[in-house]
Length: 143
Image 1 (spheres, rainbow, N blue to C red):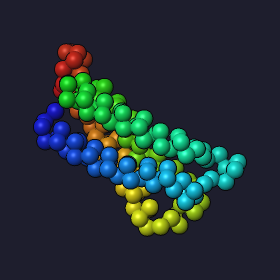
Image 2 (cartoon, helix red, strand yellow):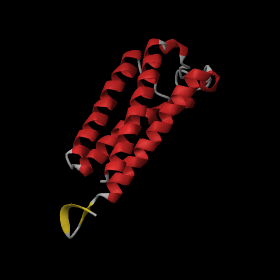
Image 3 (cartoon, rainbow, N blue to C red):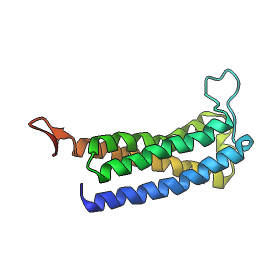
Image 4 (cartoon, helix red, strand yellow):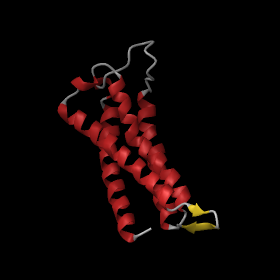
Protein backbone atom coordinates (compact mmCIF):
# COMPACT_ATOMS: atom_id res chain seq x y z
CA UNK A 1 0.00 0.00 0.00
CA UNK A 2 1.27 3.44 -0.83
CA UNK A 3 1.98 5.93 1.91
CA UNK A 4 -0.56 8.34 0.39
CA UNK A 5 -3.29 5.69 0.57
CA UNK A 6 -2.38 5.00 4.19
CA UNK A 7 -2.44 8.74 4.99
CA UNK A 8 -5.84 9.02 3.29
CA UNK A 9 -7.17 6.20 5.44
CA UNK A 10 -5.76 7.76 8.62
CA UNK A 11 -7.38 11.10 7.74
CA UNK A 12 -10.72 9.43 6.92
CA UNK A 13 -10.62 7.44 10.16
CA UNK A 14 -9.75 10.58 12.15
CA UNK A 15 -12.76 12.39 10.68
CA UNK A 16 -14.96 9.33 11.27
CA UNK A 17 -13.72 9.14 14.87
CA UNK A 18 -14.60 12.77 15.62
CA UNK A 19 -17.99 12.56 13.88
CA UNK A 20 -18.82 9.31 15.65
CA UNK A 21 -17.94 10.80 19.05
CA UNK A 22 -20.38 13.65 18.41
CA UNK A 23 -23.07 11.30 17.07
CA UNK A 24 -22.79 8.61 19.73
CA UNK A 25 -22.50 11.05 22.65
CA UNK A 26 -25.54 12.96 21.40
CA UNK A 27 -27.44 9.73 20.80
CA UNK A 28 -26.58 8.41 24.28
CA UNK A 29 -26.98 11.61 26.33
CA UNK A 30 -30.07 12.80 24.45
CA UNK A 31 -31.48 9.34 23.80
CA UNK A 32 -35.09 10.48 24.28
CA UNK A 33 -34.72 13.23 21.67
CA UNK A 34 -34.12 10.69 18.90
CA UNK A 35 -37.24 9.23 17.27
CA UNK A 36 -38.05 5.77 18.58
CA UNK A 37 -39.63 2.96 16.56
CA UNK A 38 -43.25 2.11 17.12
CA UNK A 39 -43.78 -1.05 19.20
CA UNK A 40 -44.21 -4.02 16.88
CA UNK A 41 -42.69 -2.18 13.89
CA UNK A 42 -39.88 -4.68 13.52
CA UNK A 43 -37.24 -1.94 13.75
CA UNK A 44 -34.85 -2.68 16.63
CA UNK A 45 -34.79 -0.22 19.51
CA UNK A 46 -31.45 -0.64 21.27
CA UNK A 47 -31.32 0.58 24.87
CA UNK A 48 -29.31 3.70 25.71
CA UNK A 49 -26.43 1.73 27.25
CA UNK A 50 -26.05 -0.35 24.09
CA UNK A 51 -25.82 2.76 21.91
CA UNK A 52 -22.95 4.03 24.06
CA UNK A 53 -21.23 0.64 24.25
CA UNK A 54 -21.49 0.19 20.47
CA UNK A 55 -19.13 3.14 19.94
CA UNK A 56 -16.38 1.34 21.89
CA UNK A 57 -17.05 -1.93 20.06
CA UNK A 58 -16.84 -0.36 16.61
CA UNK A 59 -13.89 1.90 17.46
CA UNK A 60 -11.87 -1.09 18.67
CA UNK A 61 -12.18 -2.55 15.16
CA UNK A 62 -10.98 0.74 13.66
CA UNK A 63 -7.88 0.82 15.86
CA UNK A 64 -7.21 -2.85 15.15
CA UNK A 65 -7.62 -2.28 11.41
CA UNK A 66 -5.06 0.53 11.40
CA UNK A 67 -2.66 -1.51 13.50
CA UNK A 68 -2.97 -4.56 11.23
CA UNK A 69 -2.53 -2.42 8.13
CA UNK A 70 0.59 -0.78 9.58
CA UNK A 71 1.97 -4.27 10.22
CA UNK A 72 1.23 -5.63 6.75
CA UNK A 73 -1.80 -7.73 7.67
CA UNK A 74 -3.85 -6.34 4.80
CA UNK A 75 -6.65 -8.91 4.67
CA UNK A 76 -7.29 -8.68 8.40
CA UNK A 77 -7.10 -4.89 8.21
CA UNK A 78 -9.73 -4.84 5.45
CA UNK A 79 -12.10 -6.94 7.57
CA UNK A 80 -11.56 -4.77 10.66
CA UNK A 81 -12.02 -1.52 8.71
CA UNK A 82 -15.21 -2.91 7.17
CA UNK A 83 -16.44 -3.74 10.69
CA UNK A 84 -15.53 -0.21 11.84
CA UNK A 85 -17.52 1.24 8.95
CA UNK A 86 -20.58 -0.21 10.66
CA UNK A 87 -20.26 2.58 13.23
CA UNK A 88 -21.47 5.03 10.60
CA UNK A 89 -23.60 2.67 8.56
CA UNK A 90 -25.91 1.97 11.49
CA UNK A 91 -26.95 5.60 11.15
CA UNK A 92 -29.24 4.46 8.34
CA UNK A 93 -31.39 2.90 11.07
CA UNK A 94 -32.35 6.38 12.28
CA UNK A 95 -34.15 6.90 8.98
CA UNK A 96 -36.10 3.66 9.32
CA UNK A 97 -38.09 5.35 12.08
CA UNK A 98 -40.89 7.85 11.40
CA UNK A 99 -39.96 11.37 12.46
CA UNK A 100 -36.23 11.03 11.84
CA UNK A 101 -36.29 13.71 9.17
CA UNK A 102 -37.87 16.06 11.74
CA UNK A 103 -34.72 16.06 13.92
CA UNK A 104 -32.98 19.44 14.25
CA UNK A 105 -30.54 20.31 11.45
CA UNK A 106 -27.34 19.81 13.48
CA UNK A 107 -28.48 16.33 14.55
CA UNK A 108 -29.27 15.51 10.92
CA UNK A 109 -25.82 16.81 9.98
CA UNK A 110 -23.88 14.55 12.34
CA UNK A 111 -26.01 11.49 11.58
CA UNK A 112 -25.57 11.99 7.83
CA UNK A 113 -21.85 12.78 8.22
CA UNK A 114 -21.45 9.53 10.18
CA UNK A 115 -23.27 7.59 7.44
CA UNK A 116 -21.03 9.15 4.77
CA UNK A 117 -17.92 8.22 6.77
CA UNK A 118 -19.24 4.66 7.08
CA UNK A 119 -19.83 4.39 3.34
CA UNK A 120 -16.36 5.77 2.55
CA UNK A 121 -14.68 3.44 5.06
CA UNK A 122 -16.55 0.44 3.71
CA UNK A 123 -15.48 1.42 0.20
CA UNK A 124 -11.88 1.74 1.34
CA UNK A 125 -12.07 -1.70 2.99
CA UNK A 126 -13.41 -3.21 -0.25
CA UNK A 127 -10.69 -1.50 -2.28
CA UNK A 128 -8.08 -2.76 0.14
CA UNK A 129 -9.42 -6.31 0.04
CA UNK A 130 -9.61 -6.39 -3.76
CA UNK A 131 -6.39 -4.52 -4.51
CA UNK A 132 -4.15 -6.27 -2.03
CA UNK A 133 -5.50 -9.79 -1.95
CA UNK A 134 -2.94 -12.58 -2.26
CA UNK A 135 -2.51 -14.01 -5.73
CA UNK A 136 -3.06 -17.76 -6.09
CA UNK A 137 0.50 -18.27 -7.40
CA UNK A 138 2.19 -16.71 -4.38
CA UNK A 139 0.18 -16.77 -1.15
CA UNK A 140 0.80 -13.89 1.18
CA UNK A 141 1.92 -11.34 -1.40
CA UNK A 142 0.04 -8.33 -2.65
CA UNK A 143 -0.96 -7.96 -6.29
